[in-house]
Length: 179
Length: 307
Image (cartoon, rainbow over all chains, first blue to last red; front, side, top):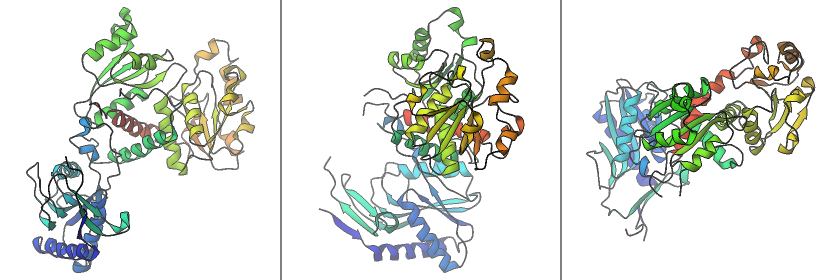
């Protein structure tokens, strides 16, 4: 059975709270840039940056990251995933990068994203913001800003929908297929 | 499920061509990064077997492999045991015994890559086989065209020169037709294959007529050996009749671009002012070559484990 965990209003409130947290931790938004992980992390990153801009009255650059070229499992996959574009139209050198993804699970995507960002330059810091942390980490990685912590079992699926891509903002916990 | 290969454009579905071009577009961005290298093909070994001279294609493959972090070895005919009489199959099998995942081959014999694909476990990429096919060239040309025009459908492409001996022409005809472009060929009758109309192309023997309404003028390299073979009276006559010169182009009313697969015979099939002129995209083709080859290496490297 599928269970709705967050609706559009919840997601909006989470992003507003996160924006305040980011600004509080970094004492403003100076030198802050936001990079979203494709696909849904990018939309969340854009919204987060927009809210921060409204609060602080500064321009916040937003980039997008496709981590497929940095995956650690490509040699065991039957088919290569389609590679999207990475767009970081600014210098990350000495910037505070807020890395945004929809779901934090094994941590492998974040590991790939960290490696990829560092190939673009040496940021002052990278901080991780996720809408949902569902546990089951396989690497020593944790998020700095968490929308919602969810205890899940491995076979369950967390489905994040965003209106830009799916027409609706919501997070669903699906029972998935028993392994 | 066996390994995938890239042997030719003939018979390649339009969706596959589109996937390769889309992937190549993403790889173009990698080439503009401060570090033009990604770790994707770490642990993948590639052998480049060049049994025929090549600068552009070989360097382009090599850069593509290096930028994807693959390991590579280069074998050229001049420095290998091919000179000692080793057969193609033995050379290849020995390289494979050293655990190579992908073999890139350029060979003067049409079908050499297909032969390798049958006798090896590795993926095989055709980097030009005789007068048969040069699929990576056609794909980089398609990418260049798609960038310029947004889409390939409905483009009118005129290919000028030595059609009979051109693997570039053959691969491009198949690719362009598959993607919905129309293709016209123009060149001396001695260098025009018989019954080529069967490929769904128009044939012209008058260059000025052929160029009317062309969006793309694709100039082929004239192999200078052809004259010795008696197929051309003289190079000068070739240039007069079939050479792409600025005077000829001023007669055209439409907007167009000039392409050439290289290496150029400046002053023979194309004049320097045209090759270096504003409508020339010859260097864009070269840039796109690396991105397209990265895309192909990436797409072929999947499926190591039975899936």
